[in-house]
Amino acid sequence: NLKGDARVNASVPTAFSHLCSERMMVMRFVDGVKLTDSEKMREVGIFSPRRYSKLADDICNAFAKQILMDGLFNADPHPGNILIAKRDKVANGEVVHVPDIGNVNSTDLERPIPILLDFG
Image 1 (cartoon, helix red, strand yellow):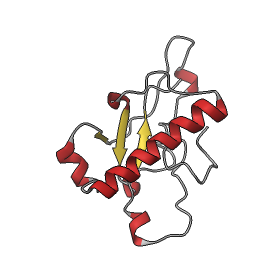
Image 2: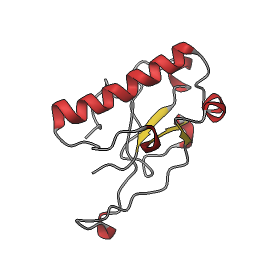
Image 3: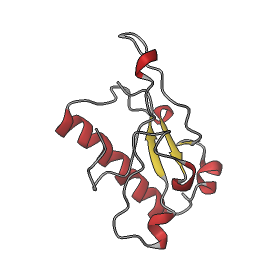
Image 4: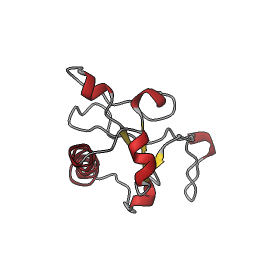
């Protein structure tokens, strides 16, 4: 439950509950970049140590909230289960929510969103 916490800049793809079972979760496709693809990361706005640091904070905050506060979390948090998407390329229908950026400035508008996969 990452929604509604201003400290968390991350989301998860929307699940199709009518297609899910105890053994399978079907989630909406989200077009994003693999965390391990440094060339593509530059294309979504991760190109400096400061941006990488901010992204690391976003991912850590998301997992900490899930594990320590909610008790509902991705039990397989490796880089292959994290995508990075441009904020303007993600819609509320594709992910659970597009994180609120609070006081809007040009840096925040360009801040990519970590999308946590394999959730459940």
